[in-house]
Image (cartoon, rainbow, N blue to C red; front, side, top):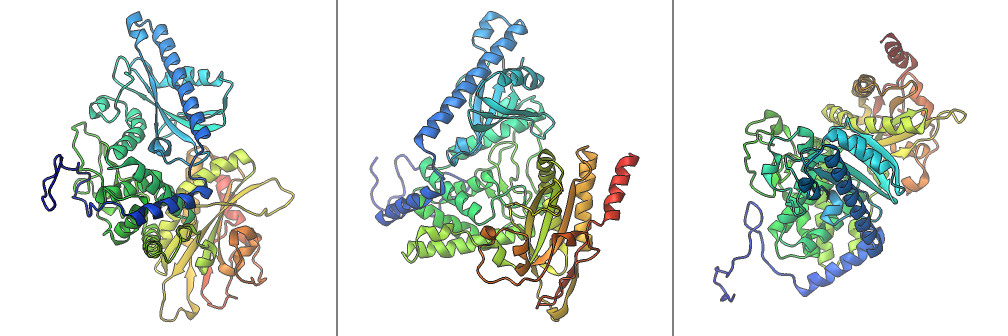
Length: 551
C-alpha cells in the first residue's frame, strides 16, 4: 500500500490500540537503536534475561505437567464412566500467566500456571487425585495445597522450578487444544473460585493482545520492573505496584507510542506517569459490560471505588483495579520516583548519563531522619513464615494510620525485610524486621515537637494479634513489636552491607530490649522531636495469652 506524503489515509490504516489516539507515531531513529542496544547490555548483569538452556528446561517441565493433567483427566473420565468417544478427546490443559506468560520472567523466577478441566472434573478432584498424582512424580518436591486461599492453589517445586497451579473447571464437555480463555462466554455459570483462577490468564492474554509490538513491550517492561525493584517500589501487598500493574502501565505507554522502541518507551513511560493526573484511571481498553452480573470497578456505581488513589484497571471482564492497596504515601513515593526517572532518562537521551544511573539503588537508610522498625518473631522457622506472611499483609494498615497522623507527611515502608538480631542469644527464636521511613510535617516550633505514636502502633499490633487468633494461626511466643529509631541508630539493628555506610555513626545506645521498656526516650538527638512509641509490655502480651486460655 502506497501513501502520498501528507495524506492521512493509509491503506490499510495502522491498527489503533487503546482508548485514545497515539501521542506520536514517530519511528525509531538510529540513535534510539543504539541506546536500546546499550540498555540491553546494561540489563544483562542484573539477571533479567534467562539463558536459552533454562528457557528450554521450563518448556520441558511445562510439557510434562501438561501431559500429567491430560492423563489425570482421562483417568477421572474413565472412573466416572464417560463414553469412550468423549474420553479420547477430553483434553485438559495447563495455561501460564504472569511474568512467564508475558515473557519477562527473570532467572530462577517461579511460574504461575492454571489447570483447565472439563465440567465433570471437580475442584475436590484437583486437590485429591491430582495432588496425589503429583506426589508420585520423582521431580516434585515441596508439594503443598492451599485449598482455603482466596484463590486456591497447589504449590510445588518441579525439577528445581517453583510452580503455583490454580484450577478452573469450565462448563465444557471437552477442553480443545486451541481454547482461547479471553472468550467471556466461558465465564457463564462458573463457580467464583474458577472465575478468580481464570482471571490471571485472561488479564495476561489481553495485555499481550493490546500492545502494538510485543518485543518492544517486553524489553521496556523488563527495564521498568528492574528499576522499580531497585528503587524499593515493587510490592502489591505493601501498597506499591505488583507485576501486573507495572505491565499495564508499560502497555499503556506502548499504545501511546506504537512505533517507538525500548529506549524511547522507557523515557516516555516516565514522562507519561510523572505527569498523569491521578486518580484518573489507566485503561488499556474500554470496559465492556458482559451481563454476567460480576462486580466490576466502576466509581459511578460503587462508592468505595471513588477512594482509589491510583486506579490501573485490568482489561479482562470482570475489570478490577489492580492497585487498591495504594495509599497517599506510596503514591507520593512512586510519583517522586517517576519524576526522578524522567530526569535521569532525559540525561541519558542527551548522552549526559549512562543507563546504569537509572538502576542505581538509592540508599533507603540515608533517605529519612526517622524510622519505625517493625519486628516479628516466632519460636520456629515454619511459624515465622506464617507469622511474617500475616504481619506483612497488615503493614498497609499501620502506614494508613501513620499517614492520618497530623504530624506525619509520609510513611515509606521498604518492601525488603531483614533478619533481626536476636534478643536473647540462648533462646531459639526467628525474627524478621521491616523498616518504615518517616517524614514529619514542618511546624512552626518544630524544635521540640513531641509526637505520640502509641495509639497508631498499638491499634496495628492489636489488629494483627486479633486476626491471628481468629484464623486459629496464633501460637504462644509469636510476637510483634515496633520502635522508633533515628537514622544514626539504624546501624545497631541492620548489617553494614545493607546500610552501605556513608559516614561515621555515633555510638549512641539503642538496644532491642528497648522493645520491652515502658517508653522509648530518644530525645538525645539534635532535632529534639521526641516520639513515644508503645512497647508490647509483658502485661499486654499476658492479656492476649490470657485471652487465648479463656477461649
